[in-house]
Length: 226
Image 1 (cartoon, one colour):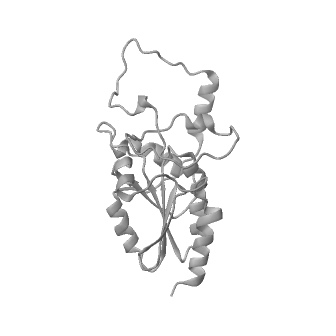
Image 2 (cartoon, helix red, strand yellow):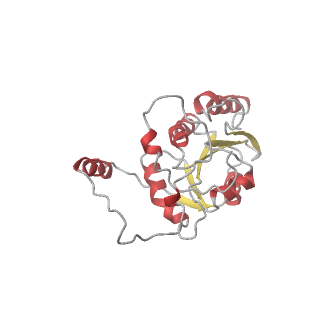
Image 3 (cartoon, helix red, strand yellow):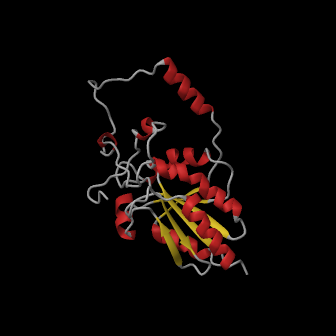
């Protein structure tokens, strides 16, 4: 699963692949262009300058007009996330590990919201963004705007939002995770019950509809809130 030398920055090419048809992409650690993985932040006089066309300007204007609701996004490491899970003993806790560089992650994200809306009294939903790449000149705050933009475009919800302060590749190695999207399900006692990440076999990735939501439904039915 491309274990070596993975650096996370925004996957610009992803926006060009949307709507192209064909099977959904397999879950992997998203690679990002070399131009965004270095510490270089300035351009030289000889660099080419791109000029926006009228259609580009119109698209940008329409995008800026889209309402973005305020989101409480808290920076945290994996240890802090586990402490948050511990705080919600007595509930089933669902943690969605995702990134703005991962198209399947963003496609599945609304299902996390729908899951919490379906079981509001039984489930605590947490999103854990892993955009941070560990580049010195690009701390977690560098990715904050793009993460907030995506989260703010989602429907109103009460999901708890956290953003990783650990470089994605280091985090993935530490928790032995090969791909995202990934969903962790913790029981009412705070213990991890199941991890969905679709990195083995012929799976095309995590599906809330086919995997996560039915699992949570059965769990809630077997172990209703006391």
